[in-house]
Length: 488
Ligand SMILES: *[C@@H]1O[C@H](CO)[C@@H](O)[C@H](O)[C@H]1NC(C)=O
Ligand SMILES: *[C@@H]1O[C@H](CO)[C@@H](O)[C@H](O)[C@H]1NC(C)=O
Ligand SMILES: *[C@@H]1O[C@H](CO)[C@@H](O)[C@H](O)[C@H]1NC(C)=O
Ligand SMILES: *[C@@H]1O[C@H](CO)[C@@H](O)[C@H](O)[C@H]1NC(C)=O
Ligand SMILES: *[C@@H]1O[C@H](CO)[C@@H](O)[C@H](O)[C@H]1NC(C)=O
Ligand SMILES: *[C@@H]1O[C@H](CO)[C@@H](O)[C@H](O)[C@H]1NC(C)=O
Ligand SMILES: *[C@@H]1O[C@H](CO)[C@@H](O)[C@H](O)[C@H]1NC(C)=O
Image (cartoon, rainbow, N blue to C red):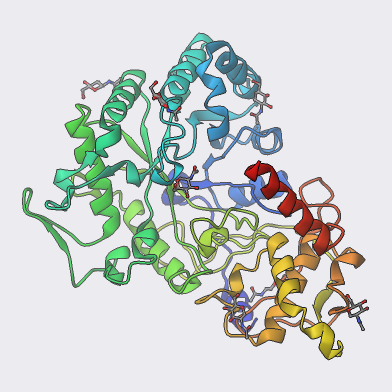
């Protein structure tokens, strides 16, 4: 609380229209239990002078809100739909419904179609290896057939794990596509080259640091390092992992015969909670360095002094993202779930103590929380653990984890946090503050210095869940039933 008040007190209103902001894009994800209205988000983009946005689908809500704004848009086809797109007629239908429909004067300024999202991620075990390239070809062909191919390009946002340097030559100039997908990647990049589309890559310096205590902390940022990586083949000294990673890709592209292929950074950013390195202070430091570098059009050593098209990840926190990658996954937003900035961030790259312009006119549920009833009978207290676990199955408790803003509370604090998170997700439904008599509603804000017990957004749409599941037992039963089906 104290921090946020201080921040709010010294925040300057963001200045609109700096060149760096015009060149910047942001990712707008919608995996949240409660979403800001699309028109509110679009106004926030405009208030910050942001002229490019990347989406993860082609939902009509955001697209209609973007119509007439001139903001450049990357729409997307989710991985689960790639298989369907291997059929040309289906691809044509998709382009017709989700691209052509918005391509009119005063419509949406669609510039790219993202075919899949990191479909070759190692952890996906090759699920989308066979379908991605045919889908890419079909979508570009459908765009061409619709007469849109000159201005709208199909690309595939890929995680940086599609390329690497050999263990014995760990330098950018030795970059190659991962051996088992090298043939496929070569075909894809040559196709992108032919169609005039860029290569889209997601680069995450934060993930280099996450769970890797040997990684030099300062190499993840842009303000110098005590341990540069010297590329013995080129003589280049790399002082940050972003440049090293980007140039590893540039080398892989050259090895595949398309050394000049334009590269778009589809995602880059820093999370603020859920891990010891996911903090607002580190995020602020990371963006300060990145934005300064982008504003200067510094490029990277192998592509010096070039403008790099970048989409920051991400605009808003998303509380229902999968936490399979880690507890930080729901905290990538430059703004909180309610579109309010978390730290200083000067999009113009001049390093001033300004913040993003927050979402305007945000509507919250009433100021009421659900916490542990400390007067519960001792017998019932023994059921605390189960009830916390139950609450956290449906609500976001990642801020309780080690290294996070709400870590270090006692068991009662944990319970209150979990109960409140659940109560908020279910829109203050009376039944959502039950927990076998362990919970009670309160008007007293239970937040502490670092830990925010949030009040959720008032949503009129179907964005949030409507009513809580009946009981923990019912849920447990359905989980067991699902397991039984798997076993059979
Ligand atoms: C906590 O959330 C409320 C809105 O629910 C917000 O007004 C307040 O600034 C937040 N505090 C922190 C520390 O983020
Ligand atoms: C896109 O087009 C398909 C029809 O091919 C349609 O089923 C789908 O709902 C549309 N919207 C999105 C978000 O994909
Ligand atoms: C990939 O394989 C691993 C190990 O077999 C498994 O744990 C994981 O669930 C698989 N992931 C997917 C997306 O299939
Ligand atoms: C991809 O195609 C190959 C060759 O037809 C086949 O062996 C493999 O099982 C397919 N993989 C998937 C994930 O469908
Ligand atoms: C494809 O790459 C070649 C060789 O780098 C280049 O000459 C050509 O202009 C590229 N094609 C397009 C459409 O950019
Ligand atoms: C509170 O919850 C966190 C996250 O689950 C856990 O690590 C911690 O041990 C809990 N604290 C107590 C006192 O139970
Ligand atoms: C304690 O738990 C029992 C069993 O769930 C419940 O019936 C009872 O109402 C609870 N007691 C109080 C005082 O909430």
